[in-house]
Length: 325
Image (cartoon, rainbow, N blue to C red; front, top):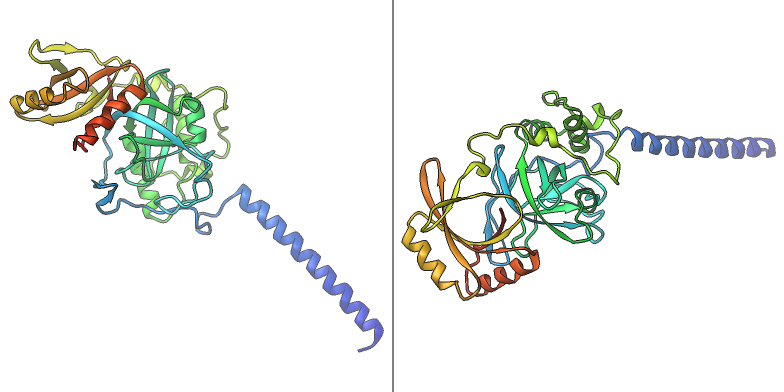
């Protein structure tokens, strides 16, 4: 090969390599701006799952599109950032996501901090938590917006948003990316507009700004909507034997040791655990049928309730849970 041909070849190779590098870099930026739902392994999938056991307790995942739960939430972040979630996504501590032990993945929930009334819509994409009978783990970002990152835990109310959860379930079953749906849901709830059926908000909501870090999303107008009849918040409690209605104000924490259809069984358990703390039996009518709940408390601090819960578990009552009323 002549010298001029070698020189031409070398310049051509350098040009091609440079062009290739520029193309790859541009493609990388394009992926960051407009993620491809079919390309990323972190897009996740729809998952309910089979019954599983953790630390001797069995959990049974189930589809729930109408569901309300109260209890204690915690948060997780740095140690899990970048790792896979239960539905195959890559966990992002700065995303508005959460982990639940049995809800379908993904699902859309509204979480209200009962201590400060701040509310936020999150997308459930992971399993957990399994410590101290807490009902929900939220991302570090979500904990910051809800105002309990510093405290570590908070008393919360969890509500599955029916329409939004049906939407993301359909999208995920079709293999479409649901990440970002929760951002659009927050902004639309704040503005009073509704989500379009089966809309993939990861792309449609690009013009919707994220909520500012210093001002957690307040969904007061959404909170004022009437609750469906089956919501647990409409169950009226009365203490035995007085059977006077107990008003749920979100200011107290209880340890629920059990629930019975027979009052005598509840009274018997209440007597057995009275050495741990103040124990009472409450009657709740669900669909007209009476149920008798045994509770310790109320406690004003999560640490006190956790201590009582640990004593119950040590006595063999692994079904005890923390509830906020």
